[in-house]
Image 1 (cartoon, helix red, strand yellow):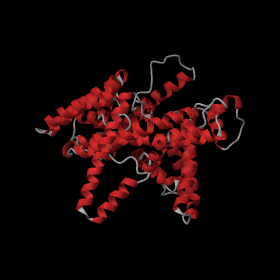
Image 2 (cartoon, rainbow, N blue to C red):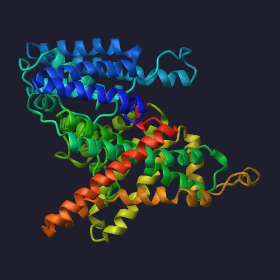
Image 3 (tube, one colour):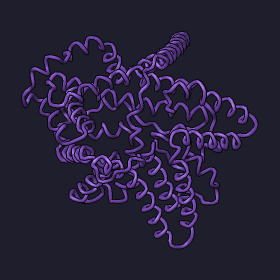
Image 4 (cartoon, helix red, strand yellow):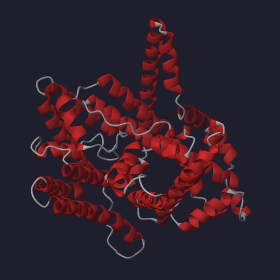
Length: 464
């Protein structure tokens, strides 16, 4: 049951929303308990086989956190860290071993959201260890709500327990703003991401028979697909959070407008980058050390970032690729500051697209074949090629999707809003609000029509 399913939009969410507000009128704490119970049920519908085990894992982490405040806090924290990493690695390894034929059982699959859940548990124990959380200020039900909260359990954004606890007690529902964010996110996924994903899958499925044009067309399609897929989910999660009085952190800030690799990763999946910075990079020494040590710290962070996404060779290469780019920027970036912004953006996006090709491919052979095709190296089987519809024909049929995708990858809405605000005209601002509401309603209607038509597709990051 994804956020972009009719079952969620027409049944689960309306029922939970209605009951929550009937209870919230009298007492927020009871309403939060209801959301926690609903979240437990939501995750059971997603992962019935893993739900009971996850509840045990949550209970163990809660008990360990209580012992952290007692003696041997380093030992207890180390045990909790090892326990959570073992759970994560076990479920990461099993699917890989199954596909390689090392094990024959296919009953164990990667649970939805396990990577995000594991990082939330690790950050919770780390904050307990650092004394950032008062151990007497909450109960097990509060902690379970933090882990299971259904707007974020599948794909984040990654939150900290103290932020969640603050919203439990002080949060104010922002229904209108939340519905707007949710609808925009739904539009990103259903209207833009899914059609472009169909083209990307077709291109990457051509293997050795792909032309240079198709290779770049597929790479750009996936670049746009993964942005609208993941940022769409984040917008939906942030919107649902607002509806119930939770303020989740921003997760995307127009990353495709970046002018350097470093800026890109400050704007892409911001909560994951913040997690690695706070709980891995800074404890290792950050950049307050020698250049050699700083390079080692970056290497560790990016190897772990790649492994967090999966144990495939493509994710390891992807992590090394971004480590190399960021190290080069650190060493030579000052020489490029005088270049025009548009030029730096084009160069950055070239490397971003190559990075997404590495991320998308499933083997070194496929990666090598695809990159050779992108740069016109290798031969084409013309007999097969003659049976493939040209990429130009696909572009003509889908041109409006690409124009909309490129247009809204830029901060156009914010620019318009700022311009109207500077005019200080109530009429202009009121007109803008009316038009924005009409646009949101139209987006919602189109979303529902496409879902009824049967264009549902799962989110990319569910596999992580």
